[in-house]
Length: 210
Image (cartoon, rainbow, N blue to C red):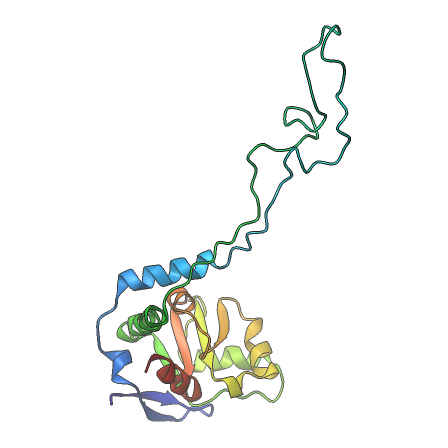
């Protein structure tokens, strides 16, 4: 297994074994496109709606008699051509769900991770611990690791590390987001310029793609 540099919270360095599947292999751009498309489409709520003439409140009374008034014929106050009437062919609630098969999801995630690995935009840290929420400490940590804050950074943590002090310490930093390794999507990885991955998160990522 290839090895990568592993940083400690106190600034010391060691090494960590990384799955060959992450560092080697081809990037399937078509599959990445489909995964990103699926993620973005599934963000749609599909709840926008307007009322048709049959849904607008009001009586069914005819505005005026059909003949002998000299005015144009009308049959309903809810007609689309009246102010306050229904909308013709307006949007209605819809389900836009678009899911990929499990194998495609797995290989899309693998391609996203490979893309960042091959660009050398992944930094490993042993673990993340904060006694209390402190944005200043989180910013200082990123600076020590040489992660430029003008770039978008995704911090990947394991389920056990997803604690309130860790989440809040990073939440106020612009262009920095935190995600769980067991749930991160290919879109989130590709959207961010750099990854900061804990050793626990790396284990969970490896388990997901194996």
